[in-house]
Image 1 (cartoon, rainbow, N blue to C red):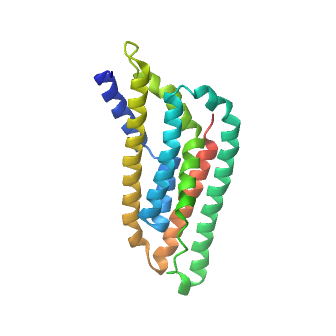
Image 2 (image 1 turned 30 degrees about the horizontal axis):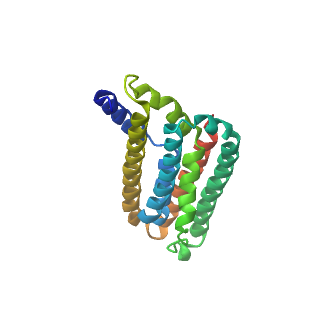
Image 3 (image 1 turned 135 degrees about the vertical axis):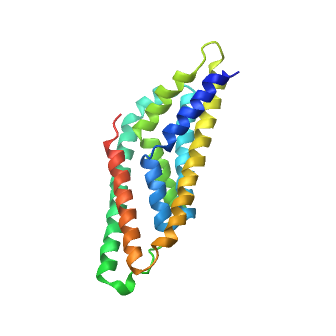
Length: 211
């Protein structure tokens, strides 16, 4: 049901592409550094659901529907951009405020609810035009026309989501391991600055994406 050579090539190409940092990876790292590994993994769960929805739509041949919903995704994308930039500015505000008040520097901001960071990950994944293009244009390059299309698309979709979960989770764990080194009066300011920069960068990256 699968061309082994094409499928292995797909796995290698997919792994290399996922390893390249993008809006999802940046958001995962930002949330892990700011609030810990668990929050980062909640972000990964949301982005994975978004990826699975797009992969399933591509496998079922629903790319036409995705195109019809492009305007809806566009509005969601800009709402996501505004929200991420706002979060980044809030983090920078905390960094500056803690710098002006050293006695409060070690106080950590409240951890966001899991469903909030889950929604962040899902919105960034679903509304990223590059992700949609990936499923529409990348998958066909590894299809064997001599074999049934549906099983190939299903296998590639599952593999794609699994690889994304694996490496995005690895980014979350690694970033979470860095967090303890950024605890303390001065280091907390640095942590907020890093988090704010990453969140703003995620928003800018999503804003610069084009359909």
